[in-house]
Amino acid sequence: MSTNNMSDPRRPNKVLRYKPPPSECNPALDDPTPDYMNLLGMIFSMCGLMLKLKWCAWVAVYCSFISFANSRSSEDTKQMMSSFILTPLSCLRLSISAVVMSYLQNPQPMTPPW
Amino acid sequence: MKAFHTFCVVLLVFGSVSEAKFDDFEDEEDIVEYDDNDFAEFEDVMEDSVTESPQRVIITEDDEDETTVELEGQDENQEGDFEDADTQEGDTESEPYDDEEFEGYEDKPDTSSSKNKDPITIVDVPAHLQNSWESYYLEILMVTGLLAYIMNYIIGKNKNSRLAQAWFNTHRELLESNFTLVGDDGTNKEATSTGKLNQENEHIYNLWCSGRVCCEGMLIQLRFLKRQDLLNVLARMMRPVSDQVQIKVTMNDEDMDTYVFAVGTRKALVRLQKEMQDLSEFCSDKPKSGAKYGLPDSLAILSEMGEVTDGMMDTKMVHFLTHYADKIESVHFSDQFSGPKIMQEEGQPLKLPDTKRTLLFTFNVPGSGNTYPKDMEALLPLMNMVIYSIDKAKKFRLNREGKQKADKNRARVEENFLKLTHVQRQEAAQSRREEKKRAEKERIMNEEDPEKQRRLEAALRREQKKLEKKQMKMKQIKVKAM
Image (cartoon, rainbow over all chains, first blue to last red; front, top):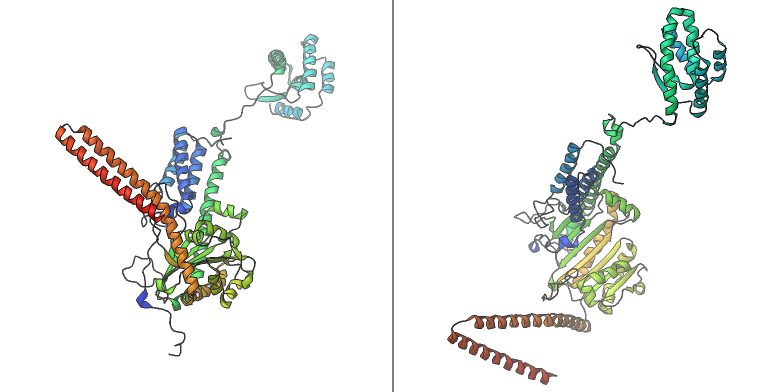
């Protein structure tokens, strides 16, 4: 082979498989946005349902959307590492039900909180 | 009737000219029934009302069929003109009409005069009873906001995906010529190249390459900006941030000598020195300027020993660093790499964290946020630098002096660590011993059988004596050693 001096650096016998990095400390190190937003979403949707405040329910919907967009793993079924509160769509479902319930109980348009 | 109606309309149009018509009315002699007194009241009322609020509206019903809206100031005039019209038509018709009209008429001005000061309020129809979409403007705003967020999510996700694919297409050839396994997600039974990036997130993509001389494997992580999150996009408008490519090469133990070394932007190095376990322990000085080796001012060096820096900064490396200085965030070679410092809880003795010989590279994608797929080609030379560094790390060996210094450093660090944990371990052991003693004593106290009690007490005393003897011995040894 003419490329003897530039020998092939590949070594098929030295292949190592990919090991996903250990997940104990990673969730804490990565940014906490999805967790915070999830929590906020839950709180706001509870407020909206209990106190019948429409704007709370809308803020909860926004929070759950933000949490979903920032979520760390693309498939939660694959990695069960994250805390089980971060169930993928539970916050979204809760906030949407808060909005729907607020409007069913009181079809008036929303009054801003200020 | 129709004529009458049109007359009213015309009168409304000429409403502002009241005084002149007043005079006309007074001069008329046809109407005998009206008293001057009545009119006098009228006049006062008229003048007042005209001056105060010529726009007050009274709805009066003259007939069952018709309702006319008359301006208060015009009542008299209309009446007068009515008279004209009616007298034209016929007296018999006008008279009862006049009476009726007049009767109601007297009262109304009286009542209306008393109500002069009460303005008529038009009550607003509450918003929810209005059947208009306008009252739901806040909801429409919210839904629009949500739609905008979803649109941005889709657009951002697609852009990140395109950027990742562009990067991979550019680098695929180089990687495949250097590594046997390009792309693995760890799930297949056999080690075959998937030839694809692992998508960890909407903004993080991984690629694992393996099967090369010198190194165990290389993990490339494309950390893009969170283009899928609208909040992030807005925050980035204030403070531009770059996409990053992080490369971590795990070296074989025999293929890398023992040293810790880092090059990068000053800010990055300061941060790494604080965060990383090995840099904080082995490179205690502040980052030094690399001007001595021909590096631009933006880059600084953190090194365990001067010799390492000299060895690392050969011409080719300097060439790489100067040409692509704007894209390099940090380059970190270490044989003691164990990741960032872990915050330990109190009283938890740890063994030294596992270390691995690694080369770490962090590159910034040009464009500082506004990247296009074609910008990924600019990163190809940096990958060449990575490959070159791998080979260099294998070739570079410390001389004897350097090796001695390095070994001493490592021994020192280990000793420090053991000392720290030794104190903690001792404390833990002490507390455990005390717990045991207390438990024993309680057992003795609780024992009812006196025989057993005596036996246990004796055993306890024997054990205590043994411990004390041991401690005495240890103290003697310590004294001798000192």
